[in-house]
Image 1 (cartoon, one colour):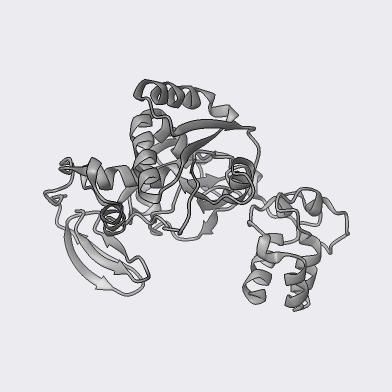
Image 2 (image 1 turned 60 degrees about the vertical axis):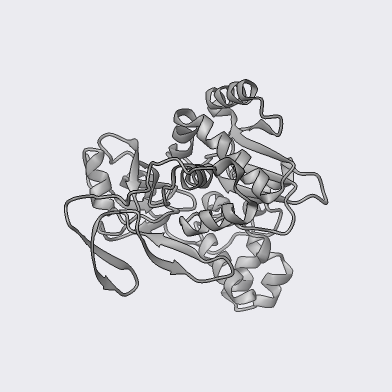
Length: 348
């Protein structure tokens, strides 16, 4: 467990690690490992890295990528934003991390700030998590971290989008890097405790789940196994979603594994997700009124349906954040997000 088994190529190669001990038995689209039942970790995991506080920037970046923690390294970073906003319903895994491991998240921010050359670290949290904000403020004061601060935002969707946070927190002309709280915590574990990124906090919830909770789940854990930890389904869900109800992906198979980016597993009932018939666009403009990116989803999706991708490009499809607001408010129930994504792929 924790052994490096593959590497994702690129300018900064990202390593992939085994989340159980055993034997690799297949490599196709995924790497299949049959457990030996021992759950034996590599020896280094959990041992504090000697001299971690004095590592060079290059050494820290190498450790992060070799531990499977994907941190971009832009040439200039003025502000590092740790995103603790969870505006999608049901999801609370980042909130759980902030309340249970606030010092580790703050230390991660300081490690990443020094490594990236940022002037400050801003922890972004929504107002309905004010208790987490107060805990973080007290830790910042106690440890005397002058480069860290907490900013609280209204509890509104899609506040967690990194472009919205960067626009609200960073003055024009300055550069920001937005990382999730989960990524920051994984960075702390990698640098300080030599633990590769092979497990994460995941919300298992929704009305169909018997005991909705947050769990530490290893990458590769099946949805079926994760739901068992929450005492299973009370009733058969109409839809199972990986992620949140707005941006998540619906799945059909319970043997689907969770990935590093999986924040939640939701079992949703028929009354929540019952599909309605799709009607032609009535030009009501609601999608325009509710678009946080300030573009015109109606014109982009109509252009996409006719294959006019240059028109979609002119209307700013590249600015779409795929928040799903347009689909949610559309009285005609048009598949707005799918059409926006279709236009984006073909316009670029």
